[in-house]
Image 1: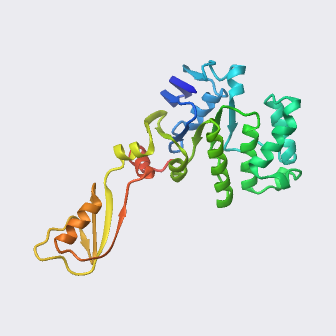
Image 2: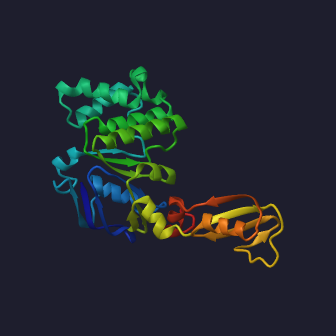
Image 3: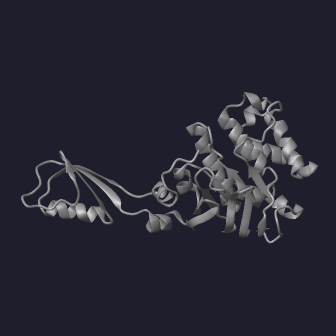
Length: 296
């Protein structure tokens, strides 16, 4: 659906994107993750045509660069910074964005009604947006981005600042869009969101893709071993060799086959009161690839 090749962008002496290659497949949700300053926003800006690359190419749906009118018509964008008119009502915002995106007068009422239901805002349609809660504004922001039925959708931190109920509604909406064949590029700092929603995840830093793949594959490549924490019910067996340090009644160790190792301990006479196995996840992979240094 969108192909990026050798993309570069600098701002003065700062290289924001450094020869990036990326292909987003039709109908998938691709998560784009990275710490602050990794180049995600600049990459998205170039992919939607609002930032001009220094070099490289972007092709949208086989229609050429995103600056072309046909390619732009394929796309919808829900930015992290809400793109709404607070003095207008919800329905007035939807009508405005529908007209701006080329929805015909004959379909305007139909699309606005669909968008209000999609966002769960039918009862608040006539209220000014500045009186909406954060979750309502986020849902309206998404509805405005898809009112013209784009085939390619960019979502930048779509759940920022929302309550759990609105987040769940947004997840349902995103999954509904995917079920209709919409291709989605999704940026977030919430690893659990990417694990739930994304077919593939690209982890980015210093303007480059560090790795890309399905979550399970990324964990397999970079997640490392599971961490086991066990509480001893009795002293270790005589002459036993512990698989890790013991502090008080706590035994801690790492393992690539945690359950087998725990079973082996039991067979060797270790008495465990309880245990906890923490498996590597996407956050483990993210920290392994990008490091723990703070990015402000």
